[in-house]
Length: 202
Image 1 (cartoon, helix red, strand yellow):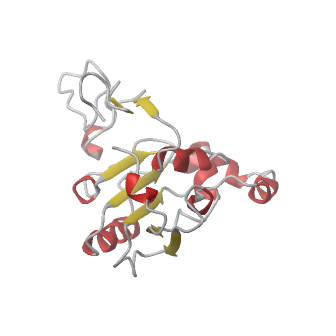
Image 2 (tube, rainbow, N blue to C red):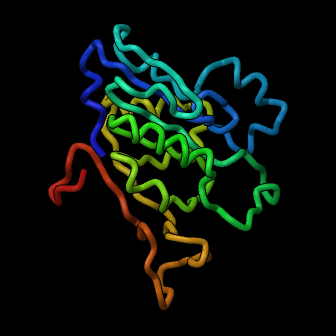
Image 3 (cartoon, rainbow, N blue to C red):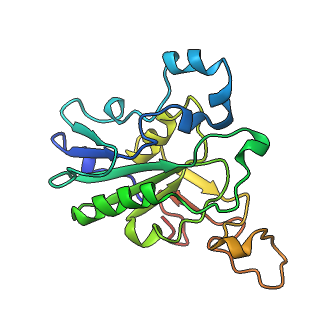
């Protein structure tokens, strides 16, 4: 992934998409169920592209991905419903059909697609990777969602590595380094950085 240099164009149009893009609960995860969350929503944080781009840049929003035609880039923010401890137990960690549909809608508009995943654990994302020009596992950034946009729009260089193995499917869970058939989607320690490293990763 490289920062969205297209947005250096002061007249760029950014289409923000997804049910998780404007709801702070998706960013704070388990904290969403606490009384403190009420005040956190008021003091800021959040996925805030309007504060990360030129004032001349037009930022628009669509929950389902409609209306993306003509934009310079589409940023689709998806994620799992916030939970705390055992309340997050699920038999299937596949991203929701609603999220997949939103990504597909932006892809059909023929513009670059950036997917930002908000979650507290690796989800099954095989339906999305081939539809995204860039895919960001942002985890739960809490009230510092602005840190995600700082990276997306090139205000801060990034470097990150996975502290877990990312499974390809539910059949691989649990998955750990050393398993006889260890073949995750992304291996433990996989990571990218910008600017490019000497190995050419970006």
